[in-house]
Length: 156
Image 1 (cartoon, one colour):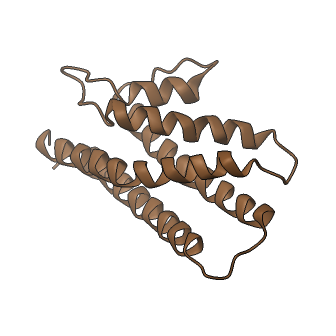
Image 2: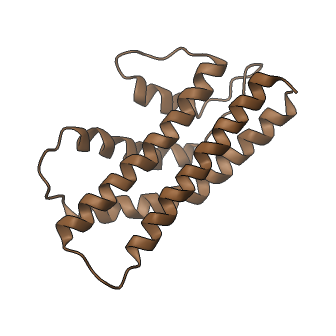
């Protein structure tokens, strides 16, 4: 098997394990019977969502670099996410579905927002919305990335 493909698969698997760890921590925290303040809860959940998305984006960047490494430098985060939906005949399969894309786009928007939001008071409705998106995307992204790993195994 091609060593570069094996290395890419291992990176994807490692990052999938990390997203699972983050998601498990989120799930445990969200189900706690002791309720923290709304501010504390929002800060923690917001941070977990950002870490979750950043881990996935790192995975997407590794895949993009491996196959094409051609991103718009001005809006590379969104360009990268969009390119993960592309079926590139003769180059690679799509990495994520269109449904995954629309949910991940919400997480990306939040990450960009959070980077420049210096207050500690988040809108609880927005955090609740993002929690729903996180719960939706988690099984979808596992399926997407495991499917992509299977594709990589087939091109060795």
